[in-house]
Image 1: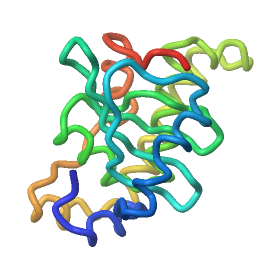
Image 2: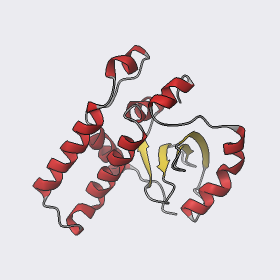
Image 3: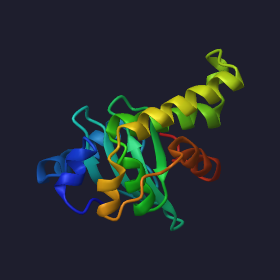
Length: 167
């Protein structure tokens, strides 16, 4: 997904080593609790123990997913390599925030936690502003990566069409 390790480091991610690849299936099985239909390929690893994976679904669809070290979130965040890069460029912490905000929005979890719609929309705007504020867009653009302008909304649009099967 990334052209070189420097892009990974800027996104606060690590490349997949042979050692990580060897433990990947066991770790993912433990985090998810059940295998996904299709195949998973590790793409990047975060020091927290979370993974970015490529999911090739049996129906030919799939995409890129974040599988958190705590087991949740474990969800798609992009359909294509380009979309995944545009979001991973935000950095691992911001990508986590974007994904959890998108899931809360789609699942209505913000309501259960006492947020009003207006208050939640302001929270999402704040998450997007903080995520985008820390990104060197010019540098990513020079490497052919366009950073997502509305990252939470981009992930919401995906999750409204397709979700990672539950574990």
